[in-house]
Length: 306
Ligand SMILES: C[S@@+](CC[C@H](N)C(=O)[O-])C[C@H]1O[C@@H](n2cnc3c(N)ncnc32)[C@H](O)[C@@H]1O
Image (cartoon, rainbow, N blue to C red; front, top):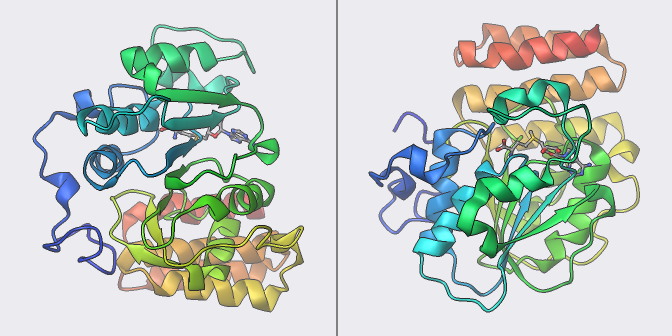
């Protein structure tokens, strides 16, 4: 199973296979929207809601941009036959256009920072009836404390956003059931995701994850409110942060693991230790698990060095 990167094959599937890959539905039906997530990630979101979701909590979709993740989640909800008097999916985004996003909005033209929330809803078509959009900065987002079954995170682009997500949304996750999907985990870009998620490792277990950048976690015990102190990530010592990054990488295999080690290199570069960052990158490139797929992340860290 080439792309099988984790861990407990029995957790989300009784027979140990990766069930979201068995559907013959064309991807153009599962995610017809311009999107940065992969086909396997779209299929996973669709399958997770259709087959795993039980309608005992909400689906929270953080950072959907044009609505690709939302569409896959909503289609799974629709086809799963879940009935609810209120929309179940809550999507959060700034919905402000950035200049290089034109490819995700074919046939449209926007100016920098223009409001794109209307196109998000338009893209969903009739599935928009299942979705509540929350436009604004996630650092100011609030959750109403009702249970969350599925939390898709593609918005933790700064330590502050990750900390807000943990302190505001994680306490609503349901022990033994809720799934958190971190879309930027197989990536060097956001080392705070690995450090913070690993600091919470006693609350989660890893579960089978779709191929590309996502790693999925299932909650095993309730997370208290305010579990992360203010400015948690920036106050980590270098040694604490390094230990968390190494520990986060240890759960993964092959080039996926190397990618988290590239995030470790990024952590050290951001903390000012360029030499250590470069030596970690050297080890990655010489590793027997090296794959060209990791070059993007190695370059990303080199660009951060300048
Ligand atoms: C990588 S894109 C998401 C791509 C999307 N999941 C897809 O499938 O194409 C990150 C998204 O996070 C949103 N975002 C970034 N920072 C944010 C913030 N502080 N608050 C709310 N949304 C934010 C951006 O507007 C963007 O839509």
